[in-house]
Length: 319
Image 1: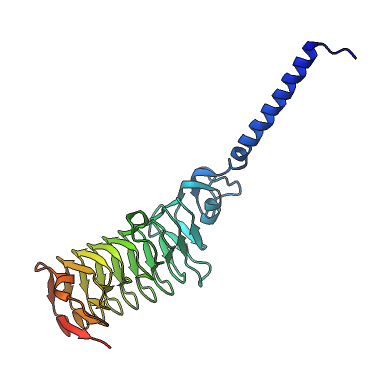
Image 2 (image 1 turned 60 degrees about the horizontal axis):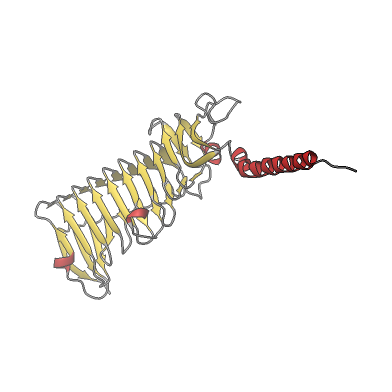
């Protein structure tokens, strides 16, 4: 059969068009597949049957919004009590309408009410009834802002040990951590931790318990009426700076600091340490030897008074 040059050229053009179409489809298909994932989502416990995460048709659970959220998404949650355990994935920022009336009440009591991964933020919630209120995963950089974390069955905030660089910082600010069944804020290992303008009170064990090797800033907090010490700090490998804290009426020490003989630095500045059940500051040497005069300093502008066993202990050697 005779085939003209025009037919050959036409066939080539058709094949090229088909190839381009298929290539375009392959490239753009993921965009269509994931087009349901959004960067700004809304949640309301009173949401109706039609739910797409928009402000007019919000989801009725926080977990549902997280499932549909893009990386670096913002999720806005209306007032109400949300009976669920949530995991904040990388980059997600969660905002509550009113911290006293926007409540995450853990459905599973043996798990953290909220787990936080890298670059996540939670702002404006009451968080309660979990094993821990918040669990911060290893090396995760997170921000916890303007929350109430209370009535959890273990620590208020538990922080898994990890990197101490500024890129992996745990920041806790303007938050009440109270009436939890163990410690208010507890780290399992070295981390970079900033705790500012917060209230840590009424926890059954210590207010703050930070591991050796912590790099941190603790400033302008009220730490009071905890069942153990206000703060437990370990000198070894740590660089902890504190300023303008009010530490009072804890059942044990205001500050308990311990050394196992490794160099570190803890500085207490412009802090009130008053009416604690034992020492205002107890210095415990558990092994080795530390030069306490150089590695642990208390500024003249700090106030210590009416601590039952004395204001600052001699170095207490514990074998």
